[in-house]
Length: 452
Image (cartoon, rainbow, N blue to C red; front, side, top):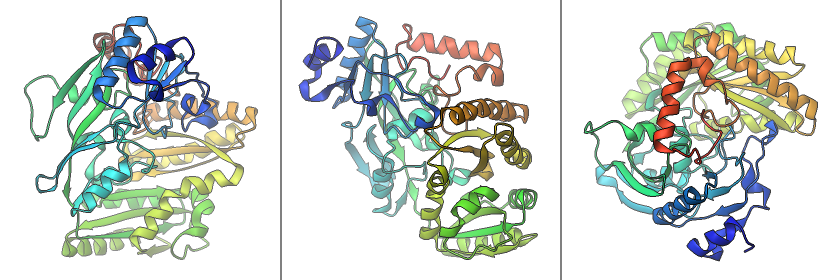
């Protein structure tokens, strides 16, 4: 290991746990099409919370920026070392410290993947509901850092709802624990919730207590197809307004449906230009009753109502983004949130923003939450197109705020949305944010440039 941060860190962790920063994989994440790439002076792979603490202490003692990294599947540049320094990859923190299925809980380290936790629960008849994208790649620590969501957040909530305790390393290099293997705790300020969604700017999550629920006996998806956005969004509002609580309420706009519809596990009528996906789950009787109610409600004003196989449907849904990417080789995507009654406006204005920037735009997302994944289809080799997509993204953020929503529902602020939080919240709220950052990280070395 050459002289510099790597040499000193190798003395702390061992040569095998430290790389130089020459491999660009550790300097970018899934925001490549936004042109976001940093640089690392060293990449470290700690194997325990204590080793994480040693690295944080060294960085704090030498004024070196430190960027924590999970699976690198984020879409906001949160894991990109924009100010250089040390990248901390948490892949080796991959132990399940305990699993107690009769108590519906597990204690897992930050590098355990989402898929592994889901499988662990499933094998014991339990359910870990958070289902963000890239489950084989995304890690629990990163999911907590962004408070990741997914399709089933409508009924079950985002990642933070399923976290009862966190172990984290905070500056200048100390391991703390907040919460634990218990459901209720009002003993102090809610530091656990501060760390959830903080994107590695306040501390580095090293382990978490997760809770499960018994897996539903049955799950029945119902798909409604409509002539356009207005009809589809009206159907979504009818579902919510009727008091039905499906596990998921998803949508695809016309362009997304045309890109991915050929692989859909069912017949998509030629005149369908909007799709709504809802899923009924629960006991066999509950799920069957809810399915019938969804068929009735979604059937109003529809072109067609389908009941595809659940496994085939969700495999297809996971592939929608890839179908859109395949059109031109890339996409530039954002996640914004709007009130449910403004969803149709957000979907239609996304297309109009693309048109103004000479880009094909489309969207899909978690309709029940008003979470819109707006995308511009791009050629990732065309710098002019990428520049137009970045300009379009700024309009998307402004639109979300104007419609009474948020600039992010589950991807976080990261680097791509820097400067926008104050426009959404106002100066005093952001000032309180900055004060919290100073208390946790007075030198500003943890994931610098992110969140604020």
